[in-house]
Figure 1 (cartoon, one colour):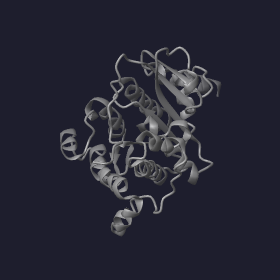
Figure 2 (cartoon, helix red, strand yellow):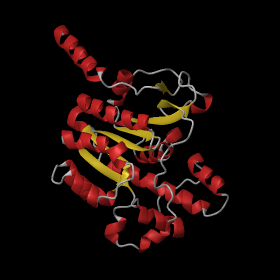
Figure 3 (cartoon, rainbow, N blue to C red):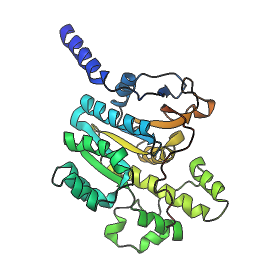
Figure 4 (cartoon, rainbow, N blue to C red):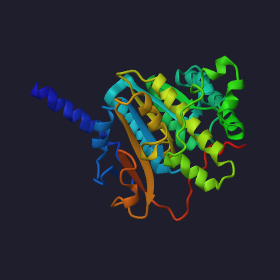
Length: 295
């Protein structure tokens, strides 16, 4: 028995020896204590859902996403499910064809609606599923439906047929406009379409939570990536999951930029279960995603 435990410990060390935090970054827990990569993986493997809030276009966050996906697969195997906001639920068929190796990468990129930075930032992540025969779930609401909500409010979705509505959160869907992440949108917009923009943001969060819940069984671990805004301070996707599965072990990671990565700034305490700090660049090179739904 002792020999087995020692062998297992050695295997764990080997698994994580080559997968560490990217250079120029530091990981903290919600109380500001530094956390090692192996400790992070050891905690995440016990969860049912892990919500990774990234900074779009910041290389370090995408490196960590891919490292964690590989390490979690090495730890929990086929129990792992991957997914992210960068893929919308009506893309699921082509996602399945790609991850099941029925089509090649050129065919996938030709027909799928992919973000401009897909090849650089997300191909490695989805390829963890392709290489290891894992389920990969497209969780986000198609932009056209979010746009309808922005222009006409969520009740406008009732005009769509039953088959379409079954793929969306049940209407009327729960929306707490007083949650800080949604109230901030209203404040920033200064009353110009603010309520519907916040609602469009919320229906994205509710949809992603729905597809995470629908595809996670008791023994699964769903590792989901999305913009940091979608789960920061235990709101957004996190809140929608907890509304339905209050006893689930849901862990969140928030990515933030700081000038000094050797201490956690006061404003970033309790932002998530784990806070991934990236050294701030002189210019903000973050990539805008599809948060704007008014088009």
